[in-house]
Length: 263
Image 1 (cartoon, rainbow, N blue to C red):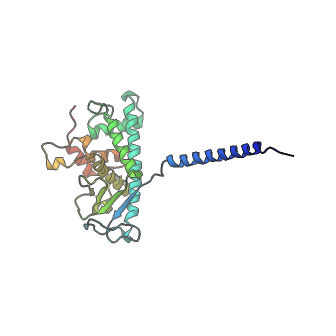
Image 2 (image 1 turned 45 degrees about the vertical axis):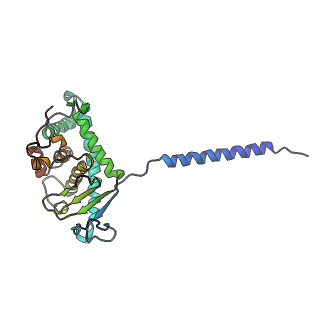
Image 3 (image 1 turned 135 degrees about the vertical axis):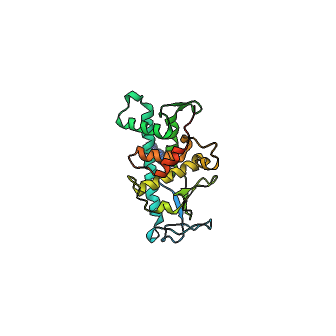
């Protein structure tokens, strides 16, 4: 007896189409799923332990000053802490900015107090050229720093011999931070653990990298010093203090030398 196979073929075709749809959706989900984030960086120092550093391309690298040559671990810990500090501070500034002065809670009042101390005005102060409150500019910059450190770009940290600073950048070289001997040293500053101090330094230098915040003008051109909201020293000490840590006295003094903005 003749038996029609059309229903079976239709069922098989339907099952096949469902499988293909599932496969396409899974492939599309994989294509558009954001890549895992995390710090992406290399360290260029001489004399590192195996796997810790890349070859020095500049020819100016100095030796890794960490016992056992473990420079990468020190940098990694500092970068991870920098991401946390930058995002935490941005959240604090946004909360204080969005809340009227008479409605702020204890933490928001303290954030606003520190903001006024280091930047000379309340975070809610409207900046005409920015089209919004002062705090929004600061928090946006800090979040950008955190995002770039958290896998947004591949960075190079290079050991250098300069002893008068913790670190420095070179204008136009936007993915490199040069680390000086004081960065690695145990400085023992009051209320400031070494990992947080190093994290603050990295944020400071990333502000130079991303925004060219030129806090050197006070030294190179004293007649036209950089205002505080454009000074990386002020950002560094503010974010450390806003998170309950002590500040580097050098940054406090440097920020205090910068003028307040005139609106």
